[in-house]
Image 1 (cartoon, rainbow, N blue to C red):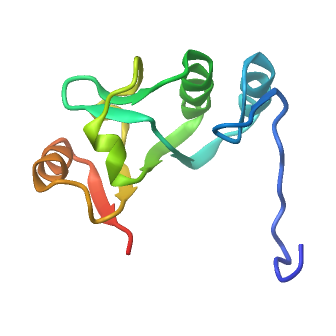
Image 2: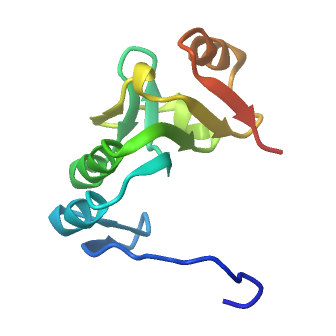
Image 3: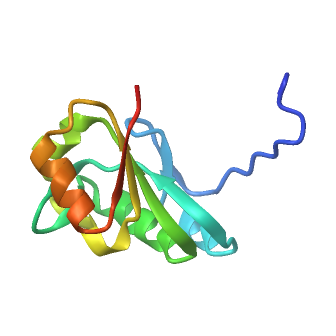
Length: 125
């Protein structure tokens, strides 16, 4: 890649989901299980104060949870619209997430609740 000296890109195997542009499934989990990471950056499909972060797709959510097992820290990257809807599948509890990066549309009540649970909230501009 031009201008990116010293950066290596590793692609995990698995089934490619076009809509979400991610690889999922057993092969992805097998490949991801070979790595140990300090931080795992992941998206989410929804949020509920009782359930935490949620997903719409069971296979994708299961793959992400598997990847998180080898991470020291989980960082959620999501737009604020995800805080007004909940997916069907539990992705991460509030206790499992250390940081959320979102836009300024996240409500004060949600941001306060996240911070009460020890989650750092970063607003990207």
